[in-house]
Amino acid sequence: MPDPIHIACAAAVSAAITWALRAMPFAALAPLRDSATVHFLGDRMPVGVMVILAVYTLHDTQAAAYAPTALALALTVGLHLWRRNPVLSILGGTAAHVLLTSLALF
Image 1 (spheres, rainbow, N blue to C red):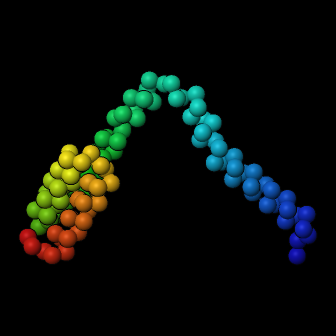
Image 2 (cartoon, one colour; image 1 turned 135 degrees about the vertical axis):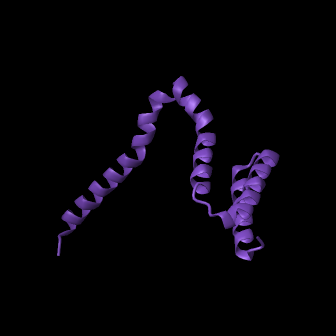
Image 3 (cartoon, rainbow, N blue to C red; image 1 turned 30 degrees about the vertical axis):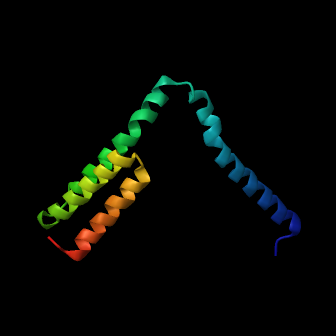
């Protein structure tokens, strides 16, 4: 069984590494706060990521699932344009898609 000094040293090293890994992103991003490129990417990336996710999701859709997928996508876009709330639009679109594909109305 390890002695208490060994355990304390191991815990101290683990705590120091954990703290450093959590602080590192803040220290690395501090010089980039005034960068025009970072502000440009911050404005444009959320839309870009959503487009990539939508294309990736829809590229493999089977012919039988076109109608529920199109309706769920239209609901997602409509909710987002109406409320400008990403959480609401994603949850609403996902719920609509699950409901429409589970009920097999199409």
